[in-house]
Length: 117
Image (tube, rainbow, N blue to C red):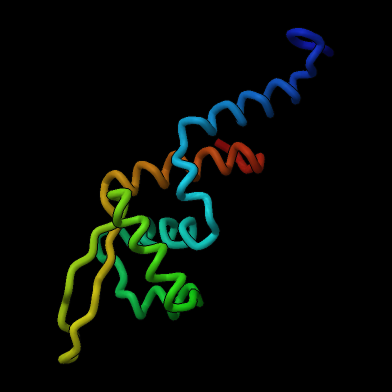
């Protein structure tokens, strides 16, 4: 069965999904940034320290530092200094804007990969 202009319904769905990508922030589409947003979104207001993120996600220092700063610069993360067991650590949490962007991105990725809406 053909749809508009001879396109199949599946073709139209793919084009529709690709067109939806324009509403997303292309700057978060790196594996490291997606891992950071997904992890911090799951943790919510508790967030995670730099060393927890480094250990859990197995991301090298320079890469982690640079990507956290990019996400902070976009307003998706905030950080604060905390003291734990006598050591000063940096705690990262996702902002409301970051949660919203992650939700949009996750929804689009699921559609793109056909894993549901």
